[in-house]
Length: 117
Image 1 (cartoon, rainbow, N blue to C red):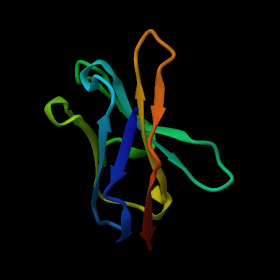
Image 2 (image 1 turned 120 degrees about the horizontal axis):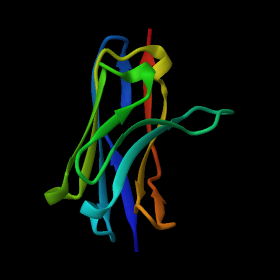
Image 3 (image 1 turned 120 degrees about the vertical axis):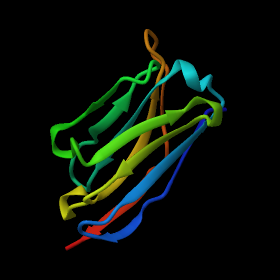
């Protein structure tokens, strides 16, 4: 059974930092592209950052220079370090695992991030 379990969300003031973690089980983690998405009520889930099998990272423009995605294959964990947080960063953050070249795609249950002004 595949599980992605996020943690690290919470309430933080603008300008603060949080680090999200996502621990995967039931998959060969090193073979999966990992990503973080964000969703707010009434909106579609949007990509925030991704990291490939080889460690190449990509970010959406509004988080570049503030967020950093990383992975630890030995711990089956992907991280999202979020710095200089803004109220517009508020949302539910979801971990995503995709096996390249296949239809295998998994989601975590989400962790809420709330940034107060």
